[in-house]
Image 1 (cartoon, rainbow, N blue to C red):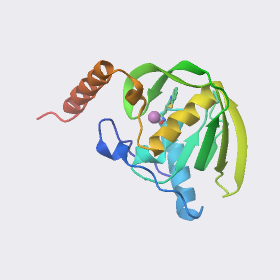
Image 2 (image 1 turned 120 degrees about the vertical axis):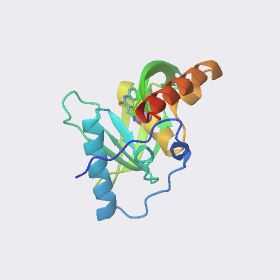
Image 3 (image 1 turned 180 degrees about the horizontal axis):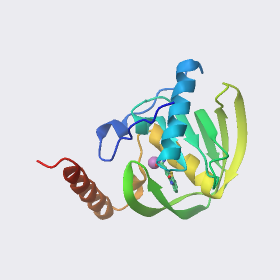
Image 4 (image 1 turned 180 degrees about the vertical axis):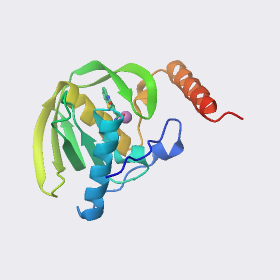
Length: 170
Ligand code: GNR
Ligand code: NI
């Protein structure tokens, strides 16, 4: 397994729309395993392939407290199960040290392929439901700051530019 570098906002590669996986082969399983290692190391509760510059429809999630419940979502599709949207504080490994409330469906129905290539379905609520929607957005090139006001998004942009300048002194 290998830890992969995570792209950071406003890197334009995060805006790439991910392509469906045609076959869950060794290469895809390797990507899944590397993504799990990267997510656990970060640490985060989810990671989309887009964030590690692999533009395929692959997501890993683990919302457990002890890294005991890895979920693999390949070619995921979800449907909101409520009309209501519930705000929840979100963060993103591609936008470090920034948190904001994002309204999302409280419950979703999910269909995806697992690491074994077999289709499965589940219903999720709360944090897991939010996380599924956040990760799915990454596959579409959407980031949670896109839901904020232009003023707030501008502030995040400046903060990240400052962070990247600090990381590469002239
Ligand atoms: O680690 C993460 N925490 C989180 C908290 C609330 C809603 C979504 C998330 S996902 C995030 C990791 C990440 O950036 N995934 O793309
Ligand atoms: Ni994210």
